[in-house]
Image (cartoon, rainbow over all chains, first blue to last red; front, top):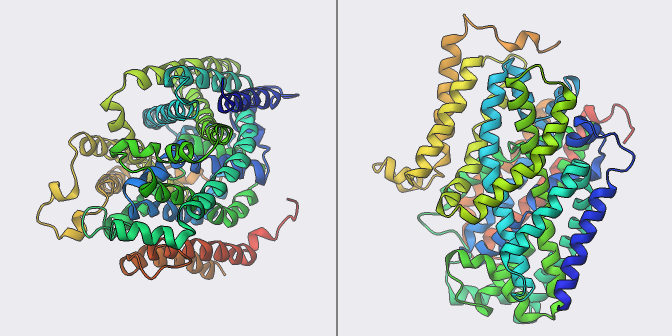
Length: 490
Length: 67
């Protein structure tokens, strides 16, 4: 057993310890379990939301994109920035409404605003279908991290089972309290690791940041900017915008909004969040440093860039610390996803279809669904294959389809009717599915358009279809159906 | 006041999104980073400053000084 492994296991044990201890002295009803009794202050909410940014996708994928794609990677910084600006205005409203109506999940919000449990079922299904591949991605990342950092002594399969057991145990036991406490450990560790790697590697190998970029530029001219076609500036702008809109639409991010103790928390976070995500720049630096030092990683293998350059540079114990940080980036968002998925299934699908079930039973069901969701994810992790990649590409676009319906529901006079909400979300989701499965681009759908428009992120089409259908159906159905707006002030 | 806050909040959208078309280049290096990356970083910092100003201006943050 090498020192890397010892450190990795120590951190996993710390996770279980923190996760279980977090429960202390709390009666675990659904409100405590899933939204922390609405008692979290600025720091916890900050860490839970920061948890959405620093997932294994950013840790491995951010450096992997820098390594393999170069300039287009910078969109990751742009979208968070714009999402936080919107959060200042949107989240306090969402939180206030959720508190006044005692909401527990994202779907509850739609159910309450549009007075339709069936809309809740639809939104839950969209959420769960989007979240499972996202969770699987975290598990796969975890498997890669542990097997690389253990120098191959632990297989990804074993690592995934261990990680999944850890997260299932503490989610069943402590719910969101467990996520919040492990998020503390995660952010401290990731901050140290990323700053260290992002500064040390460029300085050690190239003598500084600019010399590193100059070396990359002379080896691959233009790699550090956007290409003229494909991932061009118009791709960049539309992707930043779309991703920013979808940012808070993930059920687990939306749910963590409810955990705040007051609405000021969000306005304060909107100040710090943008600069905090600059840490991602250091993740990119690691990927750029790897281009000339560990060349030859093709396609998806680029995700290994960060770990490979670390292994080539450092002693095992440092690799262990890096691996441990990587594991936490999988476990924290993973735990939030597990909990949200279980809550949606128990409350917004099971209880919606069987209204006689009591709240205690829902709370219990949600907790017993945690291992079930975990096992489904494991199945897809090992058997998913290409379907998984497709689902994953869809995930973000799928949740983004919830944005128009949500946004209009926050307006004082919401003109969107129940059928309008249904039709908009359904056509949006169907368009996303069609586009993803047929691998369409705007260029292939509309070959006559100028190149700049062909490069638009294809997700825009689904959003436009969604909005048009939403508006048209709402206007047509308006005289017949009763809108939710007049009960708004209740 | 509300209009001013909204206008301030729009600035990064215009700068970050609109500016990309002009900022898409590698040199000159900004703070040792490729120009486009440096440009994004500047906008992140501006956003934080703007949000700070908005926070101070927004009357909603005056009520109830507790936490």
